[in-house]
Length: 87
Image (cartoon, rainbow, N blue to C red):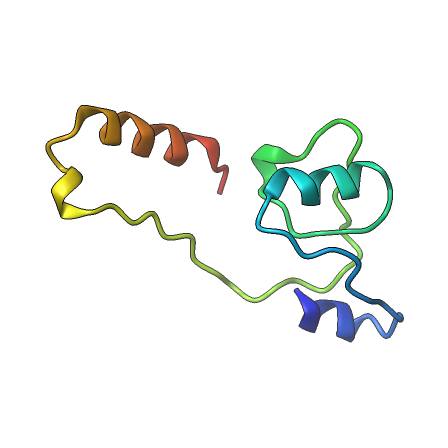
């Protein structure tokens, strides 16, 4: 994402780093910045910016312990995570 920002030629700076996706989303919703957010999490108070250069392709990995294979709850959680991403 930072490479795409640099290609715009516009000045920018990091104003928030957080492991919480919700904190980043709240910052964007408040108009304090922009971020790379999964399309499925874009709210009505956000807008998709089409004027920026495309970001490099990326992967999302869902990792699961082999010891959790027999756990029905782990399977339900895996399915919920997979369904929450719109690719």
